[in-house]
Image (cartoon, rainbow, N blue to C red; front, side, top):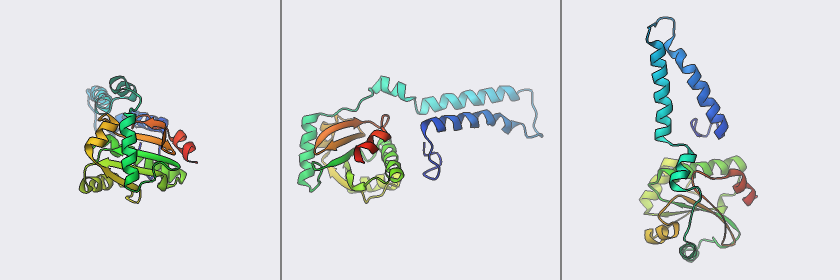
Length: 204
């Protein structure tokens, strides 16, 4: 969940357990031996309800997000092939070997979160960064800000493409992570359904 940065990495299940333990311990903050009130239980109840509800409001569970926006990532394949041709013309070997093509908008928070997740995967499994290609629309300044916010190394292959070409290929939705094998699409992912095991197996 990156709550502790990259120092302590937790899986989704470990994160849920950690949050439940902290929530269970939170009432003891009110009982330090010097503070008593008849409304303590009510305050704890209100605090717990607000904490739980705000978490779901700020970041709805994936099942709700999928119901609203759909679970699977989508591409316009004809436009995407045009995008691959453009990248090839810019010197990117996206049609050779296995590649993880990451389509990001530089101002998109979901794209930033996806970049961080993938960077953790790379470091955890010692994946070859040369297999990853980050594709943006925008300009150099916006992309530099993206890398600064995510603390993802700029040593990864990066290309900026015209916004109309990018948006027509992704149908206006981002991020999209594409597994490519010699230019052919193997799998598509959104930020909510990245599969670490599949990506690692694909590159190993």
